Length: 287
Image (cartoon, rainbow, N blue to C red; front, side, top):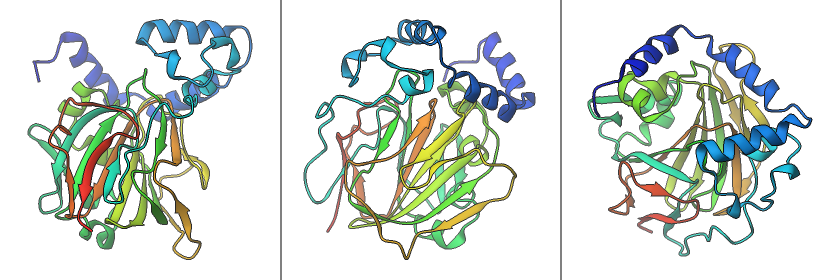
């Protein structure tokens, strides 16, 4: 990556001292306000970030009662076809691949010259981390203009969820390249599934202004009060979610990290900088 600009250097220092959670609580409040100002906020945002409203189920900005309702807008039915095939993985979201490849000895690449461990990403759960010590990973960044609902890459049974408190650094490309172990330091939600491809984890990473993360089975789960890691056991409830079904959403944008076993292989073009759409084919696994 090119040398940081003066503005980025200032922001990097600022991010260290900012009260991340206090800012995000303010954003949470603002994005749920109702009134005539909402349509103006949405119109500005659409123009500023080039949001493609043609994909939305409702493309009139006046339809949305709050900014958050707009930000988590559903898509038109059928506009994101799900990759067919019993041994395929569909992309869980719209976004851009930040990094993808092999987990080597438990180490995951964050950016060139920077990495973190699966163990710290998963909140210190040694048993879970060991299942992905030599597996595969794909990190996908959701930009402000992207669709912000998250979907299942393949049929899965929900087993466990871990909420790990932490900071809320920005997950923009330059901050990911500059801030060590960012994804293992930010607040995150790790969702562990059993699948035909073996164990799989979807890690939903929080970021500055990401005022809440939701799942379809538990509602809003981030940010709770306190700094203690929370485990949620679903192993006896058979929470089955079909490939392509919604599993959660970001209320404001962030990053998804997909961890799989070693029998998964990403398509060759699933690499840093590649734009992706929810539902598209991203990989195969051996039966």
